[in-house]
Each structure stands twice: as C-alpha cells, then as structure tokens.
Amino acid sequence: MTEDLPVSVGGTPSAVLPTDAERKAAEAVFGERFALAERFVEHLATSGIERGLLGPREVPRLWGRHVLNCAVVAELIGNGKSVCDVGSGAGLPGIALAIARPDLSLVLVEPLERRVAWLNEVVEDLGLDNVAVHRARAEQAVKTVDADVVTARAVSAMSKLAGLTMPLLKGEGQVLAIKGRSAAEEVADARKVIRRLGGSSVEIVTAGEGVLEEPTTVVRITVG
Figure 1 (cartoon, rainbow, N blue to C red):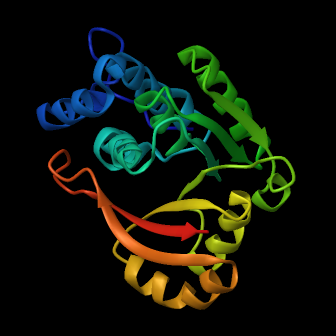
Figure 2: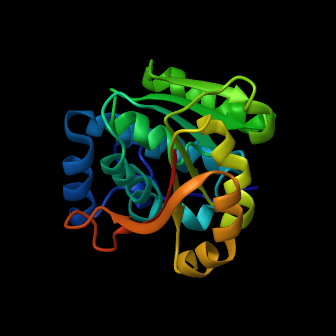
C-alpha cells in the first residue's frame, strides 16, 4: 500500500504544488504548456506512485528533482530533432522534454509492460502527439529506432550506458545522459568504451543555469 497523500481543496495533492521558485522556473521552461506539466506531475504523484514507478517520498520533490531537472535538458537539443529516451520509466526525461518542446519527435523505449501501459495512458491524457512509446530493451530498439539524440536518466553507469545508447544514433548524433556527482568518475571509466563505439567527444555540461537553483549535470557524447 502507498502512503496517503495530503490533498488540497482543489483535489491536487498539496505536496505536488510547486514552490514559488519552482513555479517561476517551470513557467520559464514550459511557457504556455505549463498546465500540461502540472497534469504530468499529478500523474506522477497519483498513479505513478500507486504503480510503483516512484516512491512516495519523492512526491514533494517531483517538480525540482525530477520534472524540471529533466526538462531543462531541452536547451541542449536542436530544433526538430528526433529523440529516443532509453529506459523511460516514469517518462523522465522523455515526457518532460515532449511537453517543453513540441517540435521534438520522441520515442520512449521501456522494456517493462506495466510502465509502458502507464506511459501510454499519460501520453494519451496529455495529448502528446509528438510521443510514441515502444516496448523493448535498448538493444532491441536498435533495429527500429534511428535518433538524432538519445537521452537517459538513472539507467546505468556510463561504461554500460554508452553501449545501450550510442548504437541508436546510427553513426551520428548525441547522447545526453543526466547524471549526478559521479559524472566525472563515470566518464573517466567509460572513455575507452565510448571511443571504441565511435564517440568523437565526451564532455560534462550543465543545463538550466539561471533557471534552476541547482543546474542539471549532463554527460554529452558526440558521435560522428
């Protein structure tokens, strides 16, 4: 059973309401699609928790630690690009990016059936016509997916993640992996693998400078 969530008068869990700083950041990132981002957060806080995609303790941190942390990565992606989100899970970063950037075409790759079902429900409810959900492991998706950009968050260490993501680029593009404080260590461990797979460069960059109190750390691998 999940923990009971405090509910506001409007029916939205009160812990899901953004702080003033989070709301300001969200309005900057999502613009006129802020309401869609709110609905996505509500999905995460309700059915997402009920189905075990996130733990109940994450509810107060959904805006800052999860949705905004992912959405700001959009600034690293060019206009009209095709994006493959590997191990999409709770739609992070895939759905957050789709809301922030309707010009992008996204494929959410997720192997677990219950997560795929949830992702499809959320995509349909939010009316995200720029998103397709594909049930497969990353290794299987290579046969059907050809992306300009591959994203990943909380999937695995870079030494393994490189092998799961880089082949999806078909020889040209970028991998954007959201990482934390271990980014530099992971990159050091993965350099040989990245080079062997055709990576021309790997760097640690940040997204959300001037928007988030703590910008998002991203490992960017360029191929081709």
